[in-house]
Length: 358
Image (cartoon, rainbow, N blue to C red):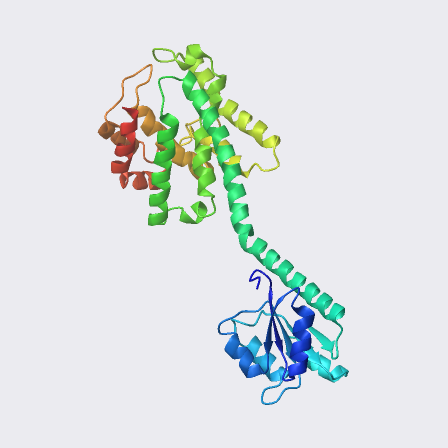
């Protein structure tokens, strides 16, 4: 027998009906003739059918009792049941359908009609199973697609950041390190419940990846200024400060050309506010205290710390201990005091990350 064919259980206390029914169905299905409801449940401990044809009028346990037992057992509850009956009245049919039967076939039945009804109901079951499988896997499919988009967006951001670092060749690794500093700060903020309510509203994947673009505006600064071997003149420094505005402008142009720009939300804030100072003496807008977005206040610490420990055209790298002291001295002036408190609890991790600059 072809075991790949779907299994049908035909339950009837009449031997002639079992024989006739099996002969009608055997070419299309693997048929199990069952002489009673009790035998049905014994057999179903070993064989699971695709569909059950169930006689209504049987001794000991009739079809109504049998379907109630089937539907109360989670192993069998989803197996479709078609009632077979010689009764042709609405009340009997309504009772069977209310108990969970999917159809009624009046005996004596014709082979073509019975086969077509079985075929239709099994098709519905198959379609429901496919839909359930699709729904069960939809979340995974969405997650996979989201991951692909995220990877693409991150690749674009990384490429832009690398272009900046390629031009500003004395600050290689700055983007990677500042992102790692931010991650350490945010983790500790959540642990210490500092600004945690705001942080919990962020998509931290987007937040950390967007940080790569905080200096993207440097791509519009001339090489003569960007790589000048010495301190900048006031007019040169004024030009350098424009990288903040150039960065925001570039990010906004990207955002304007896409319907999904939430990924860049933090990027524009990082680019536009990481040089603002807590006491209002920063640039480009002289924002003060909580006027400075939290992203900018965080990046200020990460950016300054990394600038201090890195070799620049105008200075050698400072020791980590010196950089830590400078951050602490800037608490309440350059930096948010609460964030400096967080920084002091993760200086060992900052020191470890700083070794990437070597």
